[in-house]
Length: 421
Image 1 (spheres, helix red, strand yellow):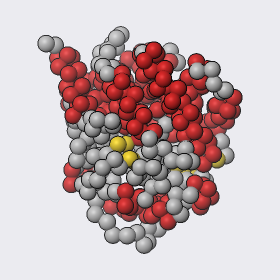
Image 2 (image 1 turned 45 degrees about the horizontal axis):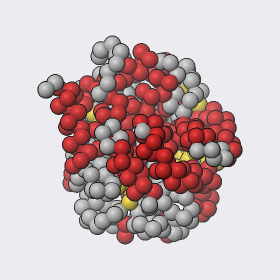
Image 3 (image 1 turned 120 degrees about the vertical axis):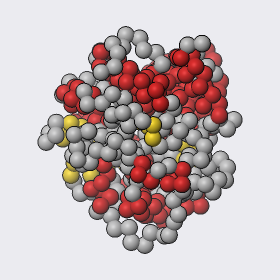
Image 4 (image 1 turned 180 degrees about the horizontal axis):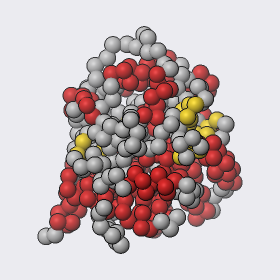
């Protein structure tokens, strides 16, 4: 049996090991519940060999949708005290115990890809999910859209939890009064790979703020102590709306509302351009300043359908410095940390989304290089949560669902890749 076939089998085994029946956990111990965008990637992975299981993943995710349309970032289907913060800390207001924030809405785009693999089987499922996804996107446009920009109310909402993009905005928060807590993540992973205590204090303080207002979306939009426009969230929502529009056309649904969202997001994207660093960047809507960050999120413009050639210069510069995929932060920055959570490591999910974007705008050679480097990281170092972009060493959690899913859906097929640099 070839090495690739062995890796394919290992990837499937990881999805099955992390499968809890109707939903998938990212990895045992570190993340023992259902995570929002992790589940979308899991569904995409399952779809490569089990279409019905893929749809079940998405159906379970939306069973936790709140009345206002929000889909939470953590869903606590069972009790597990090994994780902090748990449902008693969040006190989410949905039908299933959950957190009070959301995550990047990759569902529509990956749902469309799953549907395209077997349109006959998926017709009933996609008809049931379409109005739910539409309601979620409407929630974003009503409660997370301001001055043309999609913003987050908590670093965890971005999915890029510990990115340097949030440093300045978090520094402006005084976490006085944060309740005593005991972290559990550092019991599973080297603390040097995780957020600092200073950052974590502010994360929990923001959770308390949301909980105290009972996650009132209107109150948080007006009064949250953290409001940062995030390129990844903006670009992912723009792409998700494009894909939801195409689904709606096929289902003969009214897409006029989606069209208006796409127009607003396209127009607002220009406000994320930081001319001082010639890059898309995060923008603090409370303190009115850019983060000064060139990150993996900056390159999501192509995935959003915006063929901005200005970003190619940074892309080529950074890719010449790494061998295991796009780092989550510019390696030439003083804030670059090649092993710490979202401050430098390479993530297979971001590589895949950026790769999709490059392929779709015709940058096939660049896309092939990114795929080749992702393939190399996984082939040499297994299904880690993330990788050191310089030497490929695995970091974070292991036997990770979304890394296995990326392998099955994208990274295993080398196509015309012209080797590693």
